[in-house]
Image (cartoon, rainbow, N blue to C red; front, side, top):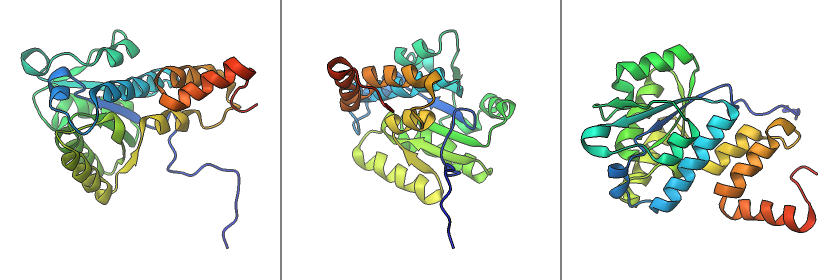
Length: 217
């Protein structure tokens, strides 16, 4: 018989148990992205990058043909990781770049969280490759996008069918925090939410301004 205990589920993420790989959040890739508004895409990418940087998540930044075709990584991401150079590739599948594999192995974590452009190519490739090699894979769906709704949705379905776990950008932030009693990261989490958390962030700002309220109190 099952028995409830106050222990988090094993598949929940925590800051120290995974590697985040942000893939090809670049101008040329965004121009053709139609499954998500570019303003929302940039906001969600910023939310994920700020969350990872603030919580000290092991993070790999990578681009494709930055100088010759696709352009620089979103400044929202580079600003979250000042001084961190993105690994520029020629391969559409990030996982096939030896430098990425070496970096993943050096970090040494068996969980991989992915987000990027486009879902059906640059996210499906590493997701299926990592799953084949025994990694657990999570995909942040709303910090990713594709040339059409159909392309994005079929890619998400394909990855989920293979064993990947889908999530959203705000979910990622709140899963890293998970308990408002964790006061060391309370201001970090609510600060990111106020700027990039949409309606939820507005609610946090409103409650604080009008009533002096705070999460967990």
